[in-house]
Length: 68
Image (cartoon, rainbow, N blue to C red; front, side, top):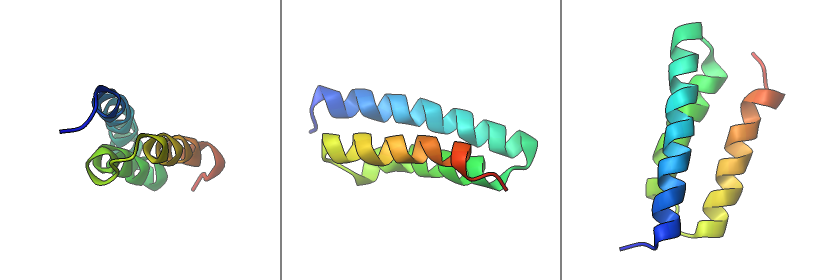
């Protein structure tokens, strides 16, 4: 079982991922949709807290810089 910080990060990035997923689905925007799926899956795949913070931060910033 993981630490409480892993659980908190999983909930946080999962909620942000759900927001991006919903926005991408309703606006028919590919980048937020893909980022939302990636943020929702990421806590299951990454067990290191600092790597999860880094990858999650990069993923949250991707829709701001890449607009298709």
